[in-house]
Length: 190
Image (cartoon, rainbow, N blue to C red; front, side, top):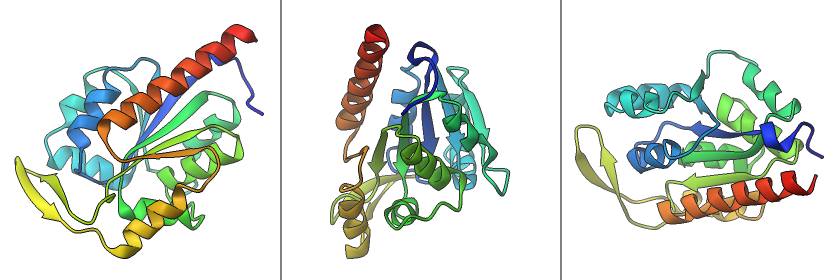
């Protein structure tokens, strides 16, 4: 059961170290209010490498970085601060860890604690098709070919309770809006 007042709850958004649809993810993030952003160590690096720091800072969201061994910011889930966790974009490494229950980084800890506190998670997985085009630094586009294990891990994660795995930006935006609507309706009924 969630603790806290639904009207005061925020959206938690975690970013991993992928450039795949990072620009588009930041655009969706910047269209939202009341968001706390959590950056993996690789995300902090990749945002700099891609030149997206101004996009991250544009809306003035609170930003937490992976700087503690125990992932201190996860305690906010125990305080009932969040109605939804979004992980976008999510690397194949993060997907694999989440699919097998590892919680050894800020982002994987957030996912584990969201599950343990019954906060729904929306995950935009980067490696969703056998062949993809992905943005690389300095406006380059590269072809990537996810491995079978990457696709298998996404399929496994899709079976997890309170987890929605999306494969494109439209689905990501729609899933966030749906969760926000349900949260608002729940708050009205309380």
